[in-house]
Length: 216
Image 1: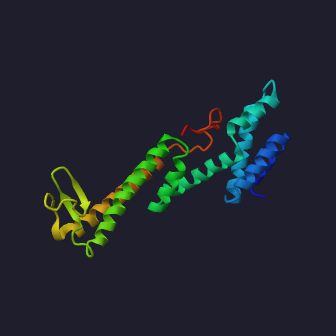
Image 2: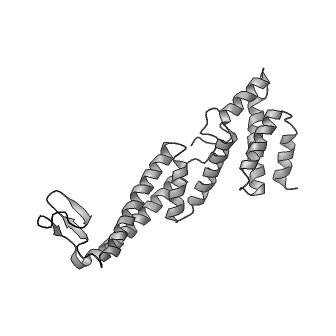
Image 3: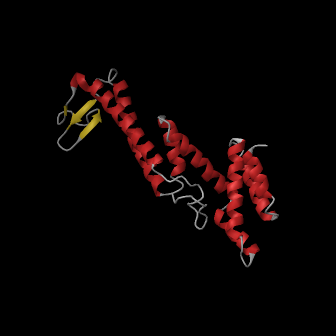
């Protein structure tokens, strides 16, 4: 038996409350994608938090009900841990697809995640649009960087008589550099936002900050 499993067994023996056991039993099934040791540590951490939060309560039954209610349904708590695992991976990744999916999940947890999602969608959308324009250029020569009286746009001109193309044969290399720079800049900005967060999957819930954890 591993050290984490032994710790989980020791903490389990302290409970004897069917509500806690039922809650963690449901949570254990939802955390199946985790590595066994990581899952055991997580379950041990949550159980210890529940027991610490209810220790010495005058009405322990009411205290247990309150803590479980604040933790939320096991499905919600498992989703938070799943998002935290994705954030940990994304902080070390340069994959735009992983970063975008992670920001989508992170946006469900608060304002920082929503800001990261907006940045990801905006930055990667621009980079993708410029890349598409590059590939369309050989088939549609009118695609370019067009300057009009009140507009500056990448694409085809709406009023050719009023607009002029700025880059000419430099369009493809300039747009390629711009698309790459925007994609790389967006990726580094997202990685910085993810790394600068305070990783604590339970702390976003009121009254459920784990010992030693920081607020997200």
